[in-house]
Length: 366
Image (cartoon, rainbow, N blue to C red; front, top):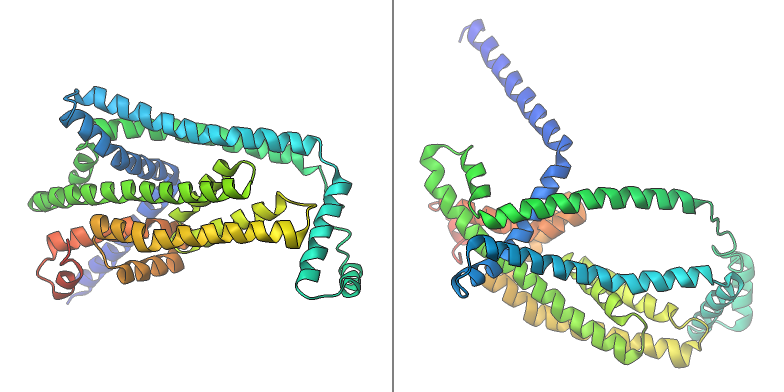
């Protein structure tokens, strides 16, 4: 091996590394566009069954089917947003009429009742309050100076979200209108010899992920119904909004239901501030906890097995390990995209490495 060959190899390696770094930098700079494409792809996968139904069953033209599907999905989204308007309006009125002193007394009263209920005497509670300064709560030190900054930040987020929403809807329309559009873009970077396998993989991925996301919506809807019924029975205001918010947390595997449950119980307790803890607050929180347990039992033994077996076709233990690994590597976002990402990888491996022993064992159900 000559010095000339070695130098060429080193230069080639440096060139490849620089190219990879430039590509990563470019992807980082356009991360918003990538996010829009990913969200639009998910929306297209969810809307795909509706488009196919309108085209095959009702014999509507493709463009009309896509427009009706987009209108339906926008209507659902607008309806969800409209659910939160009364809550925001009511909270705004509550803030404008808020009695800070009374709120402090209610919070301290709740704290006292919980402590006494757990076994501490009133004298001990008084000492704890004096030592910890619980009387001087956050409410006492509430600084309204942050409000202008918060409003400016909120307006910036709203402006960015509006641009993002328009971009996502625009891209989603064309993904639905031309289901092969994304496929054509991928094939532009694929060698001719691999095009057939790539097309087969993408078609199978589309079918599996479409069923997965539709099943996920069905899963959230079941929890939403259970939570709504529970909160209505208990008599919590804005039960529908709270139930939807807590059900939506189920998108985050394993951690999401815990977060949603804690939020629901906390909102149940705070909505009854000033009432007796042992006779009012605790029983209502207990009923809500029972509703949460019922919802999670139905979800774990009915909804999730159907989704995983009929859509992604993976064993629950396999899914659990993938979600945990993705969560450790990429956080909450990794946990959310773990299942669809793993499904896509399995399909691609089966298409191109079907003779591999490990791939065979992992993809035998596909």
